[in-house]
Image 1 (tube, one colour):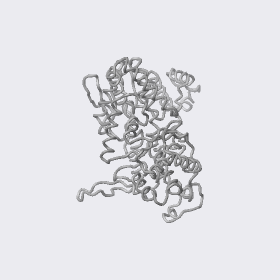
Image 2 (cartoon, helix red, strand yellow):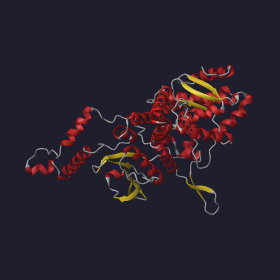
Image 3 (cartoon, one colour):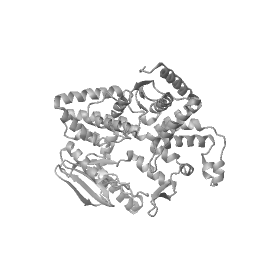
Image 4 (cartoon, one colour):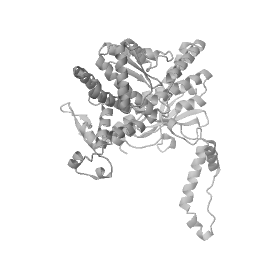
Length: 510
């Protein structure tokens, strides 16, 4: 398995057996020893060197290579979600670093296999991407490299317009549900309960009948829309309804499949890295690290957890949250009694000896993603301990000072950055606007305006597929706005904010 030296192979076996003894469960892991240049190349392909040819991979390779040469960054390891898992070790790493990396990799592989958000991902993605690469090369031979690359560029610019939760949701699109919707929408009038004239206003209250009639009218209008409901999976809508050639539909389907494969990694970045750090630190400090390796281990480990002011280090936040959860559940700091306690000193000394910490972190690893992880487990005590405050620059001194100590505001900012990977939520609202075949999208506005330059570029990419004018309804500076592109020029005009397709209107402080 792999090309490890006998020393590294023995180290791998020791680390694997140790990880299993702690209850970690993972697919077989194949370690490959590579030079820094090879590792940069593999990383530029997203961990899959068998992917289709595209200039994007070369650009990312140059960026990684320059960053390594100038000492700005270094890739210690790279592991991919597959069965078997493939992990790449840099040949120039010291033995202490190789130990740390192997322990870290087994933590990742356990997370890939057991976290619910990865349950729908293909476990043979190395083979899938190899097939994608072969098909793309065939299309390049047939239609020309530049033609195919240009279309791939368009898809890349839209590959975040998916519904990352759709693999986990039953949306009721079966025949029985659709038949029921059609039957409901065919009822144009509210069916009253039969009653005598003098009792009718009591049995069929006018306000209730009016509200039901409005609901039926709205449902009937909705049933005649295209699509019937706003569709968050914009790529799927384009794949099914845009005037694309067969090879373009196939390419779009392939790249959409890849986008869904990588989506859980973006949804669990903090948890995944925190879980891997939790286990490499546990195994290194208790078993693997020799006395003479402590300083080097601490230097590498501290570099991984270093956090710059104003930035989130997923390694640091993830491992600290897992450790906090383990400590809280070991000491019984959960449940109604603990939550009712308002004495800070009693809460600080609270210890029932519950001893459920290790079981709890395994349960958390199994069912949470970053949004639910942060939302549920960041407590006032954790925020205080980790110095999670809102900072601002003092105009007189130029120094950054604490502006607000309310941890709920910090959590709200974190959740906003994590929701939908920090991207705006965009849905297809109308595929036949005003019966002209124009495409209308809606932006679910919840406090953050669109970046106009990026929005206009997105509209141009959509036009390249839809071939007809495209629009997006949004909010800018508190006012409804319609952004459009007709193939020649971009326009922006004000619209009424109560338009149902404008999206959900709210404030950041809701």
